[in-house]
Image: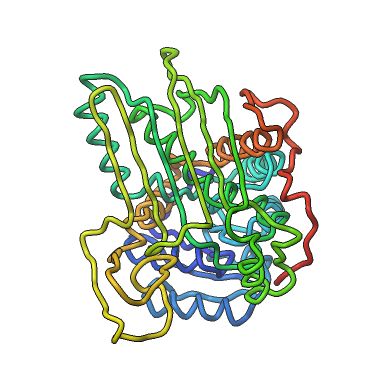
Length: 418
């Protein structure tokens, strides 16, 4: 890994979708960074994101019509991989090749969750980034979520230190469904809601249960038990809604991915005590918007966070009308009534502190607290859960012969969608 230190980190963003804009807006709260480039196959999308970066004072941001042209631009120091799941491995291969050829000055790569669709892909991501000698970070925003970090600090300092470590973490994340068609396609995304959202839940659970300053591997996965279901989007009315929205590429009457997932994960701490993570995720929740519910329980204490229990709420009567949007909360479902408002989504959800941490580690040559190895650990848990759901039985760790295992819903072929 390079030890080059930089006063300012100049990053290039690969991908221009919903999550890329979230990351971009969060960079307002990050020092020592310039968003120097954007690559997307769509000229309209890369122009939109580059213009936003410049309007926010994060540039000067250039657009690139090929990934190679971005990688060969000597001003780019680090790459943020924010593109769809099925594109990430090929992007990492291109980064490795460009660095090894001596035509690329990139010193670090950050990759959005999940790291990969299978264990084999995740392991190749690690091989590629390390073969290129690059620093690497896994972008899991919930472990940087401000109430999570603050809550963990208080619990471990004041409660766990006197009455014993926490033993149960609960994590739930729910909303009405993703923004882009590829999320709904099992082969491209790698699964359904379990792949899309359970990656958050299992890693924030591991984070909360890990003693401060200890490595995440200090608690070991013993077994996982998973359940998946189709509760809403396979119903004819809602399957038709998806087809009306995305076309025949998303047909949940014949090629569904799960819209509900449940997990029970058994772990063991350094002293052999049993710990547990309970997690549920859903694309079938209809409420004010995205709901994240987190809990941490120990012998004489508990912690709770609900993203929709906001201090700021507004009320609009039926006389107030306006176009649909997400200006109050992500995945907003209504424009009238009593509604919660997240006044700083990027901060509360953890994107600002996540990107601040990655930028500082990359420019100083330090290893982030979340690396591709954590991304691999998450993928292993997800694959174990998918295998458990398919077999309808508990799967024990360490996993055997599952590197190339593909979840059932991801084995279906789907037509390409730009």
